[in-house]
Length: 108
Image 1 (cartoon, rainbow, N blue to C red):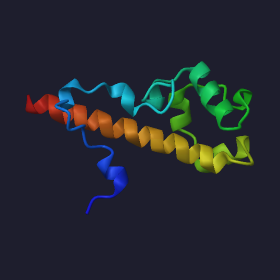
Image 2: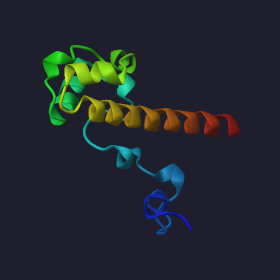
Image 3: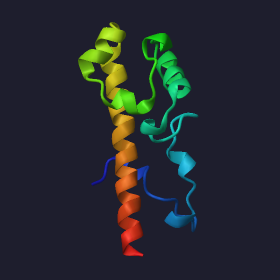
Image 4: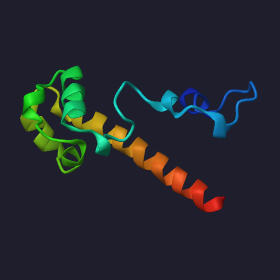
């Protein structure tokens, strides 16, 4: 039996098709879905919203990809691990979507 979270990902039964879905429903906030595309301003907003100091992350999203959990914890002692986990979750979501789109593109 699917969990409720899994059921939430099923398209609506009102006749909407997958190809007509607006991908903005997958966004959690005003930041781009793929954190690798974040500039310094987006990284700063993301860090600030999660209780960190943006000036401790003077980098773009690609640079965040190179950081370890301990590097996050050094920059944000009270919450660096949670910040790292949120970033990795967002990155995994973006990679999964990219993989899905690539598979769909090769099938059509």
